[in-house]
Image 1 (cartoon, rainbow, N blue to C red):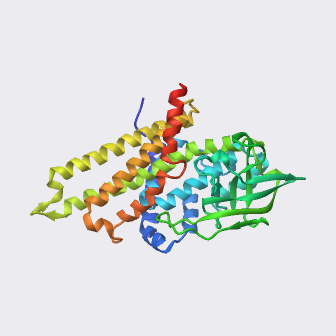
Image 2: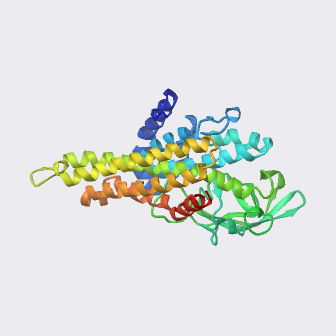
Length: 379
């Protein structure tokens, strides 16, 4: 058991940290306040290999591991959590295509996904099916060499802006076995989008409803086989949960570092507040809990890479702990800043708004507990 990073991993980590410091952090406030989707910056990230982190090299990917990705996303999130999270979603779709799609689809899309010339969205959630994802109602009816799609997807990151949508649809009967995965290109007749949602956080990426009305999609755009869609969606979420946990850790680590600097400078009762033992204990707990969550996340990433039988359980554990801990640490950092933490002059309130949704998406933390408990009772 070796907890140290190898030379390559330290290089990936340093590269991501440099990009985060130089390209994300200086612009995050403006992107947040003006709801700017920074496409040109995303493509700069792709130049470093962050557009296809675990896509095979033959189609332009970086062919890295889930642990490598966790290191990268933790660093990116320190600069702009919202933008890092979109890069994670894009990578999730690229991985789906690389892992399950036909070679024709892989050759058609992946090189442009890895450069982020094409941007992607993951479409599972619907207005009437969130946690109960297997109850989705978007249908795909066969019509010759096409499917005809009807239905809607909700809370879609990149909705209306992304060029390619990985859509979970019902091609068969009720339940998970009736779900398939289709790729739908922007501009396909019958595909439309709702208004950009006005959100608490994640403002540097658009979120919109995606609608299908007699939308004709070639059968060649089927990913995997009919009935495999739910398995594809869930396997992708194992990795997505690791990444969103890493984004929470990055945001929390950045806020802890801001808090450490602040308490050394802020004076009350004639001395820096860092000298008060109550605040020292709070900082110690923040750092300890972050380190514990990071270790579990890295263990889960290794399990997903190894296709371990308990990978899904560990990914759920890691996502639950990292996102709950991340939010708690950011909230504590805001408290340590007092009234200043509540002002937009400081970045803490933006991190606070951005990390809150991590406890909801990629499966709510209540569903994470359900996944863990089911596995425990099954064993």
